[in-house]
Length: 312
Image (cartoon, rainbow, N blue to C red):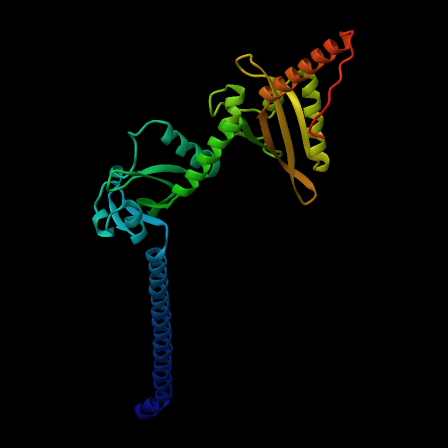
């Protein structure tokens, strides 16, 4: 009876053994697949890090990584070159050494105007030799598990752009011509410094959409509003002369050019220039008055007067 029971239990034992072997094989196969996936993921991550490192190292933009207290813990070669350091010299340096917070004057105001208002965030960085380099920069926080552990500062040299912007601004001041733009959807208005100067307003004075016309003569306000309506509806350009009373009460004559930027059949932005032509208008008026005076004088002379142009 015991032998019979043992024979009957043998298939069950074999089945258990086979099941255990199959489970072990499946577990082994699953573990190997998981390990292979993990290795591929690690290799992919290593390759991605290698690519990113090569891109950062070869980038023409300066890259600084700061720790949580503001000390440099990584600098790419471009950062060293732009700031006049060897990349290794920047490691451990307090970023405040590089940031200009003392220099004042027109040069700084110009750079801040050019980069902040016109194109984005800008500043002056102090080079190793004490000179200042205008840059446009972007700051990105480095987080780990929701906690900020550092900062990445990416910057590019904009010395040439600032030079050209300052040259353009000097030309505008010399020609007494300022630029403006008006964004239709946001109703935001931007003026150049030369336009503020024409109106004798401090630079960066808040400007509303009505301010371009509010100082014009009432008759010229109507002409300007008509030109704006035309530009918004059909994109038509306008070139007109107007009388203006600036913030200090000076009476000016200005030439206004208005153009429209259209996208997908509608006007999205108005832009143009305003030029102070007071001297030209006054000179033309004086010329006309002089001409009229001599014409009246000659007409009043009883003796006929003949003019002969000897050049003909």
